[in-house]
Image 1 (spheres, one colour):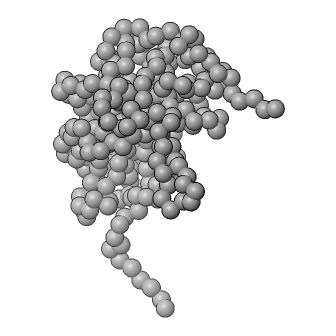
Image 2: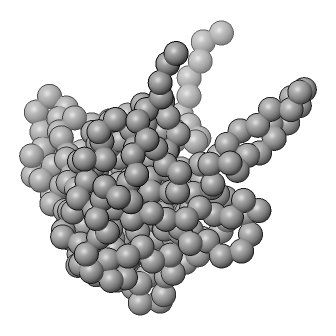
Image 3: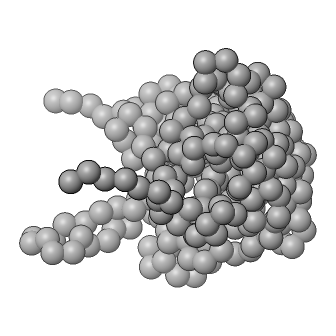
Length: 293
């Protein structure tokens, strides 16, 4: 007889967040019926249970947070297929408690913090990319029981999507911040910014847009000044968000092969000097081609 992961009453183990969560505090928001895997919950200081999106996918949604897409366009092609996007997930709190409502003032506060990050990243980005939009999407977890039939299966099979459909953006902020890191750069290259969480296996990662030739040092590595600038910019953004009651988080839907529905507060940031390659950012159209047949 095999036993599953230990079931822990998170509500009994973790105190609710205080009215002002400490900067980079180890806070956890979880959906009802989430299993605490192993002893991972001991890594957190505070926790709060949130409710899922209704099974009928209608009515009010008490667990909404925002996923902000930072969208950069290719000034040379102006093709949407050549857009480069990275995202930040943000929880809103009021009095230390999870707050699914977003006001005009909330968007203004988060805009200011994210725009400062964008400005810093633009300093290392190729000059043919321009940040032109912040798109705020409503994110929410489905209940564990929510399922969708898989077409053309007999007998019918189901999938259990973790996230409810987002729909169109709830809010869009227009930007016009152009890169100034040099003219040369391959579209598929990126600087990775790692979002640290209490559980290392669930660290998040964002891929900043194509770095310009001016940011590279020896042997194809990114220069220390750029690494420092990106890490500092994320840390400053996180601090500014948290000062106003917003918290960057990493959604976690699987842990130790078990389904989970949790939001882990980002507790640190890490940037190194090794560029990444993001294949989906390959330029959509070739401007020159030669073939032998």
